[in-house]
Amino acid sequence: MTPTAVLIVDDEGIVRNALNQWLSLSGFAVSAAANAREAMAKVVETRPLVVISDVRMPFQSGLELLTAIKEQDPTIAVILITGHGDVPMAVKAMRDGAFDFLQKPYEPEQLVSVIERAANQARLQRELLDLRRRLDGGSEQLAGRLIGPSRAMEEVRNLLLDIAAIDTDVIIQGETGTGKEVVARCLHDFSSRAQGPFVAVNCAAIPAELIESELFGHESGAFTGSAGVRIGKFEFANHGTLLLDEIEGMPLLAQAKVLRVIQERMVERVGSNRQIPLDLRIIAATKVNLEREANAGRFRADLYFRLNTATVDLPPLRERGDDALFLFQHFLALAQRRFNKPELPLHPADIGSILAHEWPGNVRELKAAADRFAMGLSRREQSMSALLGANDPIEPGLAERVASYERGIIEEELRRQNNSIAAVCLALGVPRRTLTEKMTRLGVTRSGSG
Image (cartoon, rainbow, N blue to C red; front, side, top):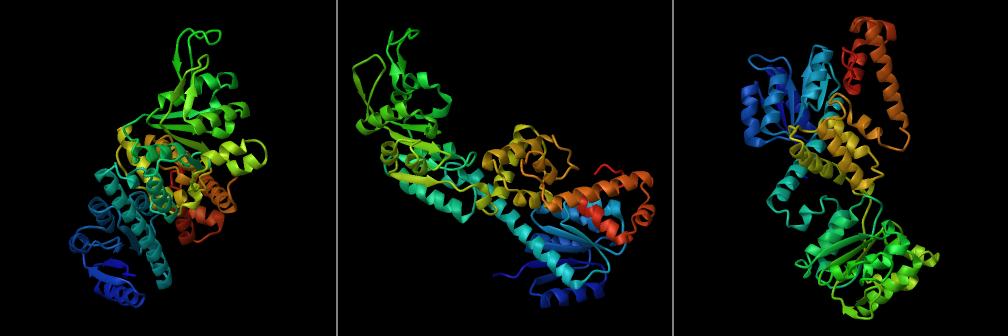
């Protein structure tokens, strides 16, 4: 593996040399700069993954360098170091995109740990940027439709390309929100039937007494209220693809009639004896295991066996590694353009919350969260974890409860002590450095706005 490229920026030569030696021995590929101007030249030339910069430097500060680096390359992780504890400055740096803010003196091992975490985030950001460039360059490609670099999604894409070329019926299985209709549409668009119609029908949403008319169509006068001829979904999808979504919700009696249509590739409208030949692909989508449903007698086994020529199992988002971050950034960019909002990079804490969230609603939940985040329905000061937690039916874990409790105590004490850090330290019995670190980590400002 290529060593992580790290750039050290400090106007003191002794500090630069000491850091250079320590980080080189720790396995990093290190370069150094004496000021912000020299640092920016190296950023453009070498594009390091991580920049470590002193805050107080002549001509241009570390905070100004942070802004310049993020404008040049938002994927670079910037770690700021200062010998002066300043909570507002630390909070501003984190909100401006700094990965971390360390106060001297610090343990060398601590810095190495922070660099490794920062480098991992920078690599993720660059993979995401490369993916977005591929999406912008060719949305017709399957990778631009089914987003995510995980092995699980790569296997799904490869399977879809194989199945799309074979004119066979398909079952798509996956939890709610995993993108079953998107996958069905991909199967259609990458098949020889792409020029034909793609028709989707939700079987669970049609009343039992209307499902035959909806699927097979009817002739005028076939039943009370049928004033004209109606073409059913099977006939409407002829020469294309018919998606039977939530097929597990189809009544058993209707399943028997659907089985006959699928087997014979002929359909009769209700009230007619004329058989209409069909040339179409059937895709059945379900959020349950149809084999288990058939074994339990809740789904016709013969229909299951007839449809089960090929099966696509969609993994839930929680089993797709870092795909959640790629998808969130993709949907966030789309939402920001749609709502005419500025495109702002995600804060490191936001990224951590996205990757840690279980996403019980899968891609559908993630897209809704990205839309809310883009619209600013949660204040920018509010953490991503708070935004996600507001819609998470699972009770927060111990870490989240402890963080919320600490945040509340500190904010309340700040109000009581008129935002005096020294007074808060005295009241809570903690060192100033400990309080500063906690306020930065928890996103607490001296105004008490959280």
